[in-house]
Image 1: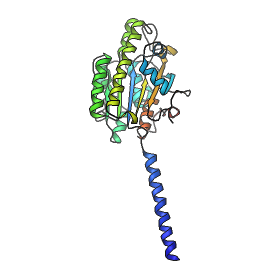
Image 2: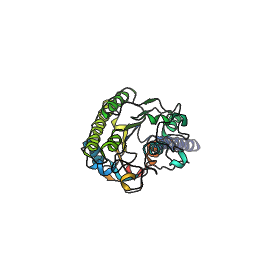
Image 3: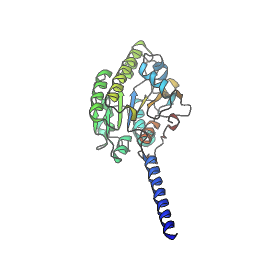
Image 4: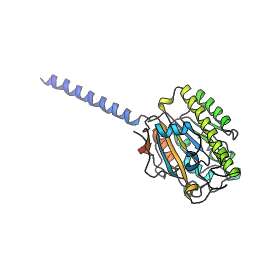
Length: 293
């Protein structure tokens, strides 16, 4: 009888340990193995919604979206993207300029890339503006490329990298809509045509993800750094401050409208959360968990 009890006790202990190990594994598993943050520079929601963008609208239909996310003050490219990748506002990341100024060095706080590297993940950034060099913290990026401003060229270079390397975390930046907005006006036919070209470029990236056979374990986030009005931006109006925030892919709710407040620095936090990378306590950004099952 005593021997039987010992055998039963040992069996129960082993079973309980197995349950704990299984639970721990499930808890620590990443929600996605690959996250692609795609930034459409200057793509304010009113203009995006008026453009021919079947890939982006497909993400809206089959994923989760908000057309009322908010960017930084001021609503300009470098400051906003600094918040997008560092998870904090300008007062913390310290990027107060909006030009390529090598003498100012690189961003002085951790980025989503440097945090991902702590978990031994691979990272890449493709940007169409040279000033993004300020985001290159040594050791944080396995690949950084500044292609031409043409969306098609940038997309092909990114697609080649995806097929070959399948990095865990990407930032893909298309700068042309902003340049066209400054030249022809926000909401102009020329800017809408530029956004359509960006959508075609996104299609190239989607195909590369599928060719690499990682679509089922990937999340794509489509967003922007700011909107605009007339031929400028940087103010406090909704036209300047509101940005799209669209998620599609593994675990994303389908046809879901995000109604809670979303800011640009939530993007970095969401990317790390999806990859099961610890989010720094000092970050202002929070994962947009309502967009996911």
